[in-house]
Amino acid sequence: MTKLTLGSYPHLLGFEQLERLLERTAKSGNEGYPPFNIEQTAEGAYRITLAVAGFREQDLSITVEDRQLVIRGRQQDDTADRVFLHRGIAARQFQRSFVLADGVEVGEAIMENGLLHVDLTLLRPETVVQTIQIRKG
Image (cartoon, rainbow, N blue to C red; front, side, top):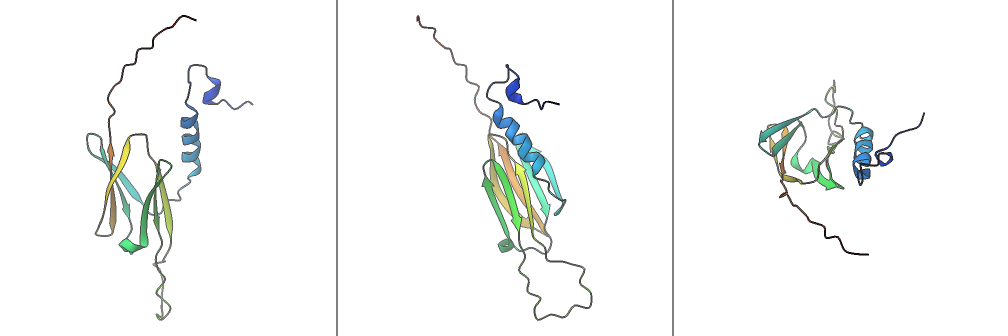
């Protein structure tokens, strides 16, 4: 069976980036931790909220890498001098990735009651009409 790619369709010129985007999204394989919500807060405005109970601001990093919003968390293990009778709350690290469309800008990040909120804004480009002149060859 032959794998069809966007490049094999003659009317879809320049969409190779979209194909790479779909492959990258499929490979991200986030395991479900930490849980998150994505909500639309206004026209062209979105908020990603991650449940990061137990993490401090300095335990978290937020970066944009190649149109991907990457949120990482790594807790410091300060349990060397503590004796646990039961340890049900594990200090674990995570990485969550969200692929951003062109024109999506990452705004501020707010930590509140164990929730990390990251605001996004979709910038609408102006519609441009371009006329191409035909020259004689």
